[in-house]
Amino acid sequence: MSTAAQPPLQSLPESDFGAFRHRTSMDRIHELLEHGFPWMSFPSDMEQQFQRDGAAARARHFLISGLISLFIYNGFLLADYLMARDVFWLAVELRLLVFTPVSLLALYSFHRGALPWLRQAPPSIVDVLALLGGIGAAFSLAIILMLSRSPLIYFYPVGFMVVITYGNVVQRLRFWFAVVFTVVLLGTFVVGVMATPEYPARLLWPISSMVLSVAMFTLSANYFLERDERRRYLLTQRERGLVSELSLAHTRLREVSDIDALTGMHNRSHIQEHLSLLWERARRDGDHLSLLLVDIDHFKKFNERYGNPAGDVCLQKVARVLQDSQRRTGDTVARYGGEEFMVVLPRTDASFAVGAAERIRQAVEALQIRHESSTTALHLTASVGVVSCQAGPQLTVEQVMAVAEQALQQAKLEGRNRVCGLSL
Image 1 (tube, rainbow, N blue to C red):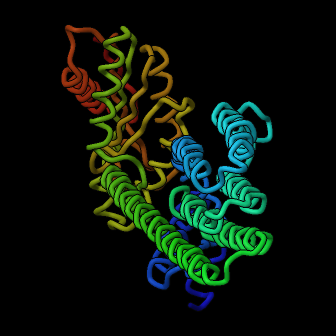
Image 2: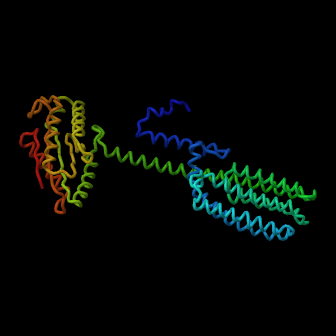
């Protein structure tokens, strides 16, 4: 892909940066789903997010499977009694007095966050603890194997298969942790067998092949389990991204449908909906509300004399004046239709509303846009109708709108280029 296909980040408006980043993330997800991730790793930032998103579930799995595995590990005391009876009490000490307390303490500390470094540890701490636990179990097997002189001890190394299965399949170590774990376990197995006096050669290959086969099979299973987990994660992220894109598109469509294309202001449908919401809030709180209707005087004659393009420019200038005249964040202005504009002033009484309307009238006149066809003045002017009231159950927003129209008509009848205010 050429670099010209995407704009540099510095050239993006701040409002579009999030969308750009979202598109970039979606592109990477599509690429990973298409080409795969044979090394079991995503790009660094996505990998960190993947680890964080799965940390809670992996922690729960680690705790539950850890407790179950610890119970099974101690259940193998029966095998110790049958196969290594001469060192059985050593096995009891290793399993019940050393490995079990240490493991329970580690599980409890991890669960409660008792140690500060555990609270702030990265998600991979789960894999580190599971790896260390598995290696500890393997070492206990190797110690028993090397010290026992029981004739059945030569079958004891099959226990390594259980430990390997624990790490690679039960705990589902991340693949590269599983590789390290498997290598260490195989090394421990080799050391244990070699240190066992007079280990029968006729058993060495069958036992070794079984342990090695289990190591390879479980490591392969671990690889495919993690691959499927990562793929599900990408599919979930893609689905969320598509939903986000649809929501964003819906929001933008909604915004576009509420904006007047010529002036960039809110349009009639938006201001009516907004006015209804403000009215309900004002009626609930018993607040005042004022409404201004602004009409450009003799605008039809302006278009006939100077043409529609000049009329459009005129409307844009008036719209800018109206927007600049609003001094409070709650005030809303919109193009109501044609050459008519509406201004909604929440929590505003009559005196303030009339003052705001007069500022608007003066600002339009100050534009000094030539209007030789006007019978009011030689430049552009505007008439403003104002209605103010205290919202209450006896009034409706439709009644307020009707009175605002009356006030505007009264301003026109009185000669235009003026403000006329009515109250309810």
